Length: 337
Image (cartoon, rainbow, N blue to C red; front, side, top):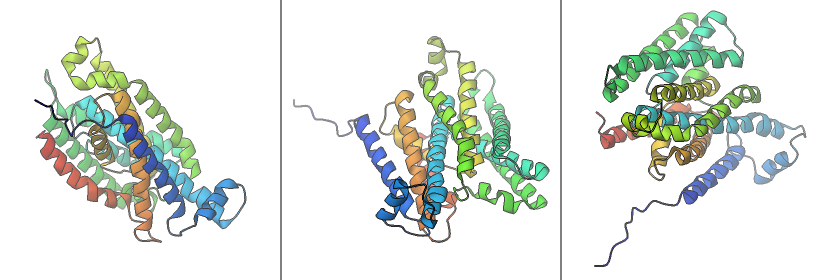
């Protein structure tokens, strides 16, 4: 009998990578051209060819749009990788730093810092966001841990939702009480408006370090994601490795929140889209997820800028239109509850 070829044969990784990379380049080009004002191809090329020539166009392209693009690349890659790592660490398909309260913890710490210390340097903003992320993560994992049984998926989701809701409510209350709306509204809404080169220069290297560490530990994450028993049988110290990988997740999440504020669903959507086309090998998943996350963030920011110019639509408003239906579909598909 003649065998039929399955139509579900996985696509070559190089083809997937090149497709995402093409979208990445197109997104950068369109982000340079379009916004509150639209510039021609010759305008963009003239500025890039002579970036030191002072002009109004040079100010817009080099000092406003280009740092936003770089920040979008860094944050998109960081949030996507953080979500992918969180899913591997917890072996929970709907785990995400935002859903598990990590972003809310960073946001609350930032609000408290502004309330008691006033204006802050970007390095201190990063430090407070990291501290808040650690506290939120400790609470979530502490509440969801069952002795001798590990982390229960349902308890993990419920604990994350509870901590995220609590910290978000506290943050909003403190913001109103101390009159901090003008100082933290950008971080609470999420988005790349106001990002400048100084912010990118301080926080960008932290994100790059986190991404490099994640790739270096890709094999250990692959082993850990299979099963606790399998990981231990292969000689892995699961406790120490879990703490190390969670530290990278917290670093990436806190740096992202410090740069553009709390943004949800990116760490949930992108990893699952990538997993549909890539094998369960984090040495492959991580770089593809980095590129896909950066591409997604660039296109998302572009939509925010061109939807209602010259005004900007909050990024969370755009991503929620995709994130909520995707989240419900994922729950039904994964059957984790």
